[in-house]
Image (cartoon, rainbow, N blue to C red):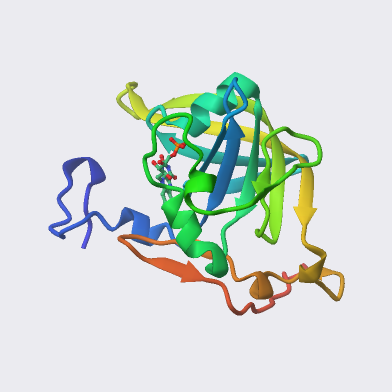
Length: 200
Ligand SMILES: Cc1cc2nc3c(=O)[nH]c(=O)nc-3n(C[C@H](O)[C@H](O)[C@H](O)COP(=O)(O)O)c2cc1C
């Protein structure tokens, strides 16, 4: 089959786009508002986009608390969502009013970050402390704002739980990160395989 996203002519109950661009890593974003109130929410339109320097991005559909806080304060933290933390991660996506701490509601302990003010999820095996580079209210081909706000941040400090360092590497399979797929589906990383790039 072929379909045209704008025409929604896939003939299926749901557009499979998000099941195709999958699995997507989850940035579990903590931020503070101007008054220092904590906010935590998962974003799966999230990824690293540069290694030199380390740059990450996430995309918010609509003016949500995370993007608003980050525009106001310039800082955020991306904690790794894992199999063990899956219920709390999901709970933290609930649409609580501004100023209510999703972390508290989800029963999550937070830990102080090293260089930025927002804390990280204490039980997450790793977390990226970020400073805002820019936000982009991205337009579609029609030139109209799509409703999406893309937040770009440079990673200024990285926390890794030493228990997940094995043989000099971050043991991703032991951390068991979860990733978002389409529909209500998630994937969990339990195994890895290695390939070496060809040299010409
Ligand atoms: C696994 C998962 C991934 C999500 N990814 C996104 C996303 O990429 N963009 C988005 O706008 N909302 C996403 N959401 C929904 C937000 O987490 C939800 O709207 C949340 O209430 C936003 O919180 P905030 O207003 O505190 O930022 C996701 C929810 C879940 C459970």
